Image (cartoon, rainbow, N blue to C red; front, side):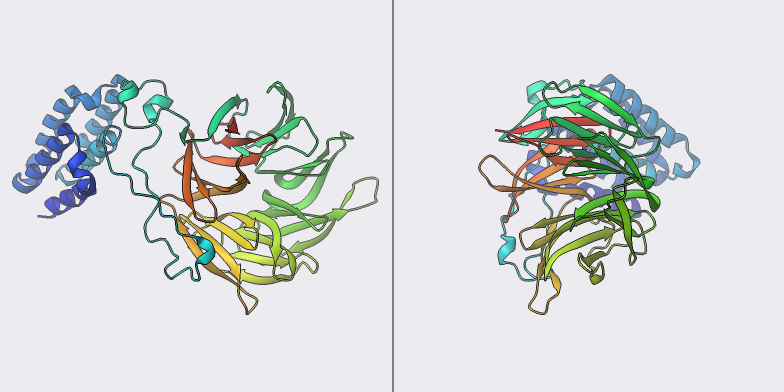
Length: 459
């Protein structure tokens, strides 16, 4: 019957780890299969109610608050008329049991693939990773909320980092919403952070205290610095501060929210929601030291990310958009020289690493681009994540090894050593990490969707 087919499909996710499944999980699996194979569909709701009572009393429901929430949720399913056939009831319960049991399950962790991207030649050939970098263990959600009852016996991590070589120095939680940018101007002892709560906060690097709050009255979606200047991307404008003179300016022109910024060739570029990249250069005018010089058109949807790096013939500007494309712009002529189409969803981040361009997307891939003899760019390696990629950032560890930070929408950040993409560890957060910034003396900073900034140190 159709119900049996669906249940068996749901249970197939246990196959690889069947030998290590706890006794209780095996019992639930067995009983669910029997129910699907032998019970009439109209009787399933009765069985579900019975199982609910048993599950309430079993070890997987030890947390009272969780028990209450789950019970209410399942009871709500039972009373909905559309579930009277019993099919969605059982499948829903199985899904819920699967999710809850995953907290206590023991599964095998696939070994990391250590293919070297430098030796790959085609994004669609052998270099494309067929599987995903899965890890059955994650940070314990109950521990994050301070109520895990398993202590050292818990299968999941009771730590904000899995791996070796990192430690948490401080947690700075003053922002009320998503931290979208963190910058530390060269030679400054002040750290700047921007957030969708409409503020830019200034932090003392010695004390870790917030010493100033700039209320901008609109969401800050991007924050960068160049020399003595700090720039914040706002709705319909860019705010600029000079940290030496305390001068403040508003650069008008963008239509909609400014989502990404970059500086190259003494030019400030700002990508906006209208799909246009706006450009300013230095000016001798006393009213404003920046003058608009161009508006780069080409994308059909919002600009999500910008970066400047070496390209064919010199420095280039790279832009990623919600239209799923990447465009390459000549910094001298400000003309688009190339359009790259390989992602199937929003291009979320761009990073230049030596002669390579790295791009990430909500489609769950990181693509490595390299120049061809014909003067174009092609994908030479595709790394696949299990979840959509939110942001990329690169830095070196204390040993000088190149590390790529890959933030995903499952609230984790995976660390990979380049060029092999071998896994170095994983950071965890309560919400997506949107900002990653390198600091001095082995420090770096992350900012997440709760407004929390974390200071990390390489060991």
